[in-house]
Length: 272
Ligand code: NAI
Image (cartoon, rainbow, N blue to C red; front, side, top):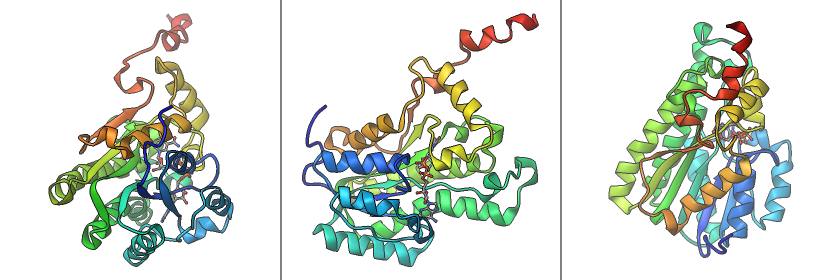
């Protein structure tokens, strides 16, 4: 693999909860590729402690921040710039949570208080991260902001519940920021639409294993792993992708362009 793709760059990685988290792998690879990073997560998630191990491995600090709090986000950027010695080049938003999904509330019986929380944590926090950076002028020219999303933003996956709407909002906000931040400082803003991945957030979706196996069978390349997703993130943070912005980029082994797979049809043959 190419080396030092991120040499001299400074980044902020959100969302590393444990070694299964996509963000965990992004952090490791960013450092391997020569970047200096800071890590952050919600104070409540940090109580689990695993992130401190990652910080040690990445030779960095953890700055607690609830991504829905503007005060916390301002502190995150200020402390990161202070610790890393300058403005930021890349930001990973790897945050998602729905109380409705967690509590098994179907799309037809949402709790609207929970729904607001879903939007705030999973989508509006992306806007807040971008807006805080914009106001602080915290990101260098040609910097890259990435969010992680799922194809339920475009197609119906009934068990994904209100997270589908949150992902639509997230992708739309990424386009909005791609315009505004691009004009201001040539900062690129994109989302990566990732295959189902066995993480804490992923496994929270009802029937996840069946869902995972179905996508794996439908995709000519199979599901993209967290490791592959991290590689794509590194490319998107690097100068190799400098003219890519305002895009929702499918990283799914081909799933998004499939109609049907013979392996799935076979399962219905005996019903003819
Ligand atoms: P994960 O559970 O490891 O990561 C989710 C993170 O969000 C956790 O670290 C959690 O502490 C953090 N978080 C929750 N509320 C927060 C808050 N208020 N402030 C700051 N952080 C908060 O799971 P995973 O899968 O690595 O999720 C990362 C991203 O990838 C999410 O946006 C998820 O929706 C997205 N994604 C995941 C897929 C999957 O199948 N696992 C598929 C497609 C996208």
